[in-house]
Length: 511
Image (tube, rainbow, N blue to C red; front, side, top):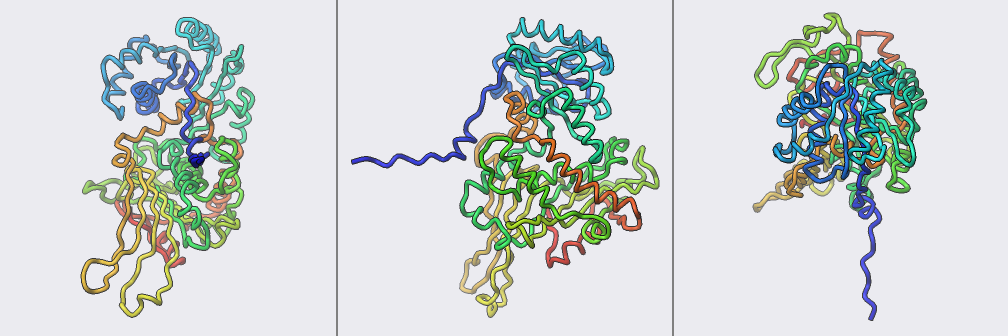
């Protein structure tokens, strides 16, 4: 008698397969900056602790300050002990630090790049890194052009003899559509699109990655993931912090460009996309681009009906008085920059017709958190009408940060002789369910770039479609300023945002 063999699960198999990174050298431009110390080096150490780094790796910091390899390693160790998610083990750190080097040069000094090329060749020979190079632009965006130009002029962008070269570009990727196109063109002059990794750290978060698995590996959810069952979707990014020394950047950017254009539109795409043809990077990114192209444009008078912009005033956060945005250091005292945005977005396709997506992001809000809340339609009220019981809608909440996980609110009868219906919550936490700490986003993204897996990175057309959508909103805002609302620090935003969602007979979730 023949026994049935278990059917394979292509999705499970595809996600289970992890490529082992090739030996390589990671060159970090802007190695003395905050990003390197707080995120990149701790991420690399944690990858080393998990045994996930390639068998041979070199890390070269490129910056203009005068340092020795030893001083650079010492500074990085101090930062790693402060910011690493795992405790620093002295023996492991010593082994990891031996792979870290410092190269001094200004970004606009071509001789510094030719000297870097010689040093990378020496490291290849000494450490077996096989000529594979990953360049990370962790400098300010105003330095991207000169770095890319000198990589091209020095020939460092060219792979040799079966090796590879890749570049990781940090956000902000442009400040509008024309600047994004210009930067894309500059990158394309030095690197092929397949060699370009535009980073959005939100996509490296475990729950963001799990959205596809939750949807497409569970028939329960995918069968109801459409306008027939879903009433609306809320995507929220809340933080109690102010500009925290970034006023020079933030006052020119604002919440729409800083958060909506990249992070929140990416989360919307993952929520709304169709099943991809495969698990390869381009199949997934093809579907995300289709969502962006399906967004109903917001322009002209429609912006002032469907978008609320606001700025925080003075107030209290966790019992501490904080200043208004206009009173922050280096902020224009007459600034009209928005620190809060709420908007209604519609995806005009077959699946989502009539289902509004409500997006909000704000600074100086009461609590830190990012989540996607899928609100399902109400059940017909006829069955329980006589009891006088009100029934809450089912809500599926995908928590991106800080407590990564998924919860489902449903209704249940309370124990007792009378019929009382109360909401209950089924809750899944990554940390408790799998018994291990969730990796930091940069760990996954660095590893994927070393493997050449671009799934969690933005493609050129993704970036440009997102800017196209956002630029139309900014163009409308430029015509007037009397729509700028205000809210007290420590509140959940302006009343105008509550009115926006109330038009759909809904209310914002409290995180």
